[in-house]
Amino acid sequence: MTTHHSQTTDAPAESAVRVGNGKDLTIAILSVTAVILLVAVLIVNGLSPREAMAFGQSDKVGKYVVSTAQLEGTAELLVVLNSEVGQINLYGFNVQQGQIQRLQQFDLTGLTRRLQRMREAAQRGTRRQQP
Image (cartoon, rainbow, N blue to C red; front, side, top):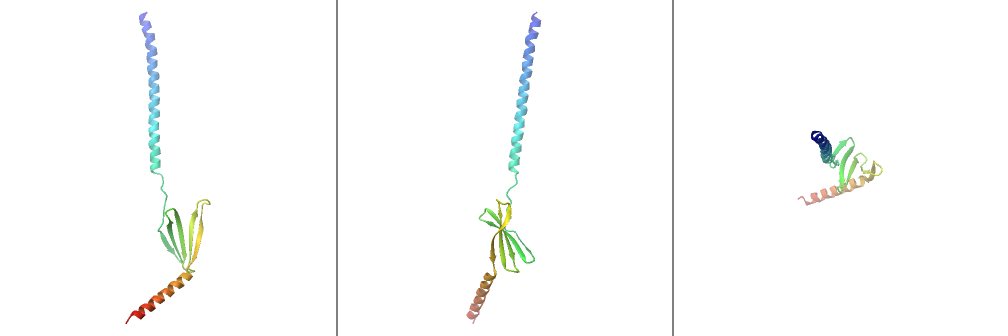
């Protein structure tokens, strides 16, 4: 009878070991999953796209000269010069409306006339100074 009694006490001990191993296995799987997810989050944050800044780029097409500029390091501007009519349009991106809008327009014809007068005056001054 003692043999039968020892078999009865061994059976619960084996099932307790199996239950403990099941919990350990579950904890191990969850821990490995958590580590994998943490590494994935760190990689995604490290590889996330950076803000694109394209200031200082320019191109000329026909009568138009297009250039980009940066305003105080916070905003990108698009500058369009129409050389035929002598105008500069300054555009910026409106975040609230999600579109590019004209911010200001400059007329260069008056400036061009003033510069021409300044050049002529400078040339007259250099002619007078020559012996």
